Length: 423
Image (tube, rainbow, N blue to C red):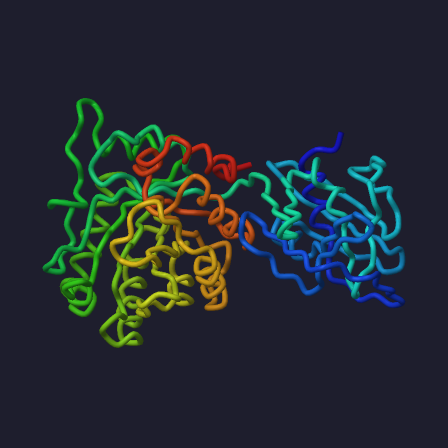
């Protein structure tokens, strides 16, 4: 029996090729394809011919992280994919119902075909075995596909003061502890009504939590929060003495508490004030902070999406200085919207594409997901987009919400992704 990896590879085996002597068959009524509930755009239309549903899978293959190659002489497709850490090599030949999977011959229900200059793969050839769940809605003529589970980097924002979600830390690759902020006077602090180092709970202390995370190779970050709602962030960034004091405070807090990284969550820049000027202030600050931190301390920056009202963030420069960026692709719904109102997939997808176009390497980009907004049936849409664009991973705001609305949230997330494992 073919494994999931094999099927994922074959699923992806449709690729863009230049072909001659193509004789397209009679076109069927329009067929749409969704991957993880988000439409896929093809440059050749999916079709149904003689009861067989065919889909051009170059786009799907790329979305599934499959490497593909076309041999025009032999009319052969080669695909190499990795699912759950296992690599599979697949070869398909146009017109042949025999595929080779890791050197073994496998019979397909229908052969790959040429159509409109593309190679199309029959849907039934992978629907049961390729690690991709497939369903067909005859009424809407829609193919719905669910991508297989994939390892990605998972980051959680830890509860501000409580210790009750400690057990969830182990499911993450890294955790940003929300224990510091820039206050209303532009001063860095670990104390206050919110975002403070929490008091110990018996034998459990903030330092012991950080130490335990690091011991499990889960990188602990100190999250530094600031909102420019009253101009406090701009005040700090534009005042050399205040900015230097915050940098020194962050550096000392990292050393004193054993953090392995710093995560800046500086929000609200470029809304009312000049965007270019705010970008320069933040760029200069980030460069100075990076220079002040030890080389083995990672730097992450959470940024609003480029399709938001906040334009005071130079994505390309920030990505060149930081180890990664978290794009907070949420809060698209109107202010006051109740919880469990999923963010629009189209806007989240646009936010990712804008970030990549702006010059952020995909291996440095984490998709921020608000668990306040998502449901167990919608969170996999966002995780599917992180997988589709082969991003570094996903960051959840926040860990404490895993169980707040539904016990099924953890299960839904783990069905789609699992934490990256060092090999």
